[in-house]
Image (cartoon, rainbow, N blue to C red):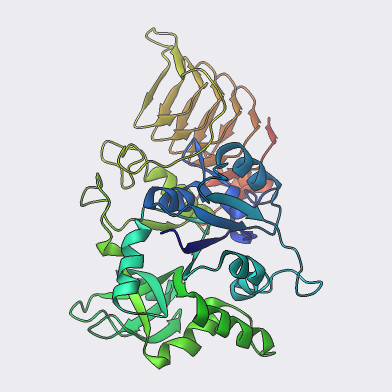
Length: 409
């Protein structure tokens, strides 16, 4: 892994996640009580032994930069390893990144300086576990110039993804963005197609060559999926890595191949709900492949009051450090750190981020509550969606989203 450079794309604006992205970039959105979305891809690389990582940022990056500074400082002068944030520097002109390929092109100096054999280019906004070393091994074995990670999805869901076609050797033979008609299925598996995960391993030389060509193409939108892949795969040396075959110790069969693009408020809520329950779809308690992060020094969570009418307890839920559940009931929910939920309050099927206060007798159902929100006593959220829509975002699936710092009366 010593001569492999990793570049994480973490500049996403995340417009479909507003209001959660009104003050922060998408990879910096809190997730799962203790984490930020970017922690999952960074943990995958660190657990895989890849320790030369640049994180490319752009929109509203302060929250992300602070998180990286507090939790991901691994630089060493003895053994060259680092996780370095790289803000947009406009090295090729006075412009922001115009696409994923342009983001790498504008930071070509980093590739030149590190002089790697391979370059991993991964997104920073998905929830999954992956041993990247297994993908690199496949890439080297196939003598590929580019390997694209893909996940099998049902044919009926193909319209939501960029769909890859492969031959029997898993060589890429086609790519269609959100196909309107039925695409080619996986060889030997007629019920599934391959969806691109937006994760790539390039040989350094071909990557630099294609980026230089793309930068001169005035008709290009400078995107890997739309421009780079279609130009490279016809040569026959672009391969596809089947993520569903990636093996992680401690992962049971039900979780194998789990990957979630939390690109909308509904999928973000669904991914959080996947964490709770007796047999979660995505298990954060796997000690063999931990999700690493920064958590402030806080005391353990506390549950207080025990009587017939006033008992502090949580069922099928995760509760963060420093939280106090005081005579309240929490069901099927994810509660962040330093949260206060007061007596007779009831929270169900909700995501409560850090430093939230829920007043006495308040009731919350199917909601996403951002940081530093104060919910007044006896308030109701998620019980009258018509009223909720007058003040807050309500998704197609009826999830009420309360923005950061709001005061709910």
